[in-house]
Length: 97
Image (cartoon, rainbow, N blue to C red):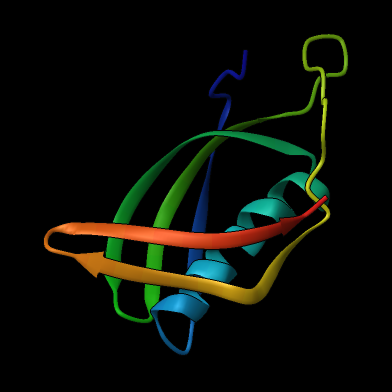
């Protein structure tokens, strides 16, 4: 179980919505790969067409408590997209494992 021990700011930009989505996921992956955080919750502070400001609620990985079964190696830009149907958004991403 991931506990909220830290709240970290996150600001992400993209050239368009699809680019923003990929950059958002890459930043989330970096929290894990580069800084050793497991993420639990996100508080979105501001969303625009090409930027997101948020707070990431997380804790550092504790090998005694957290079992990592499969890691994501990368977020692929290829075939990523966001589409809106009515009031609902759908995202498609490809993760490399």
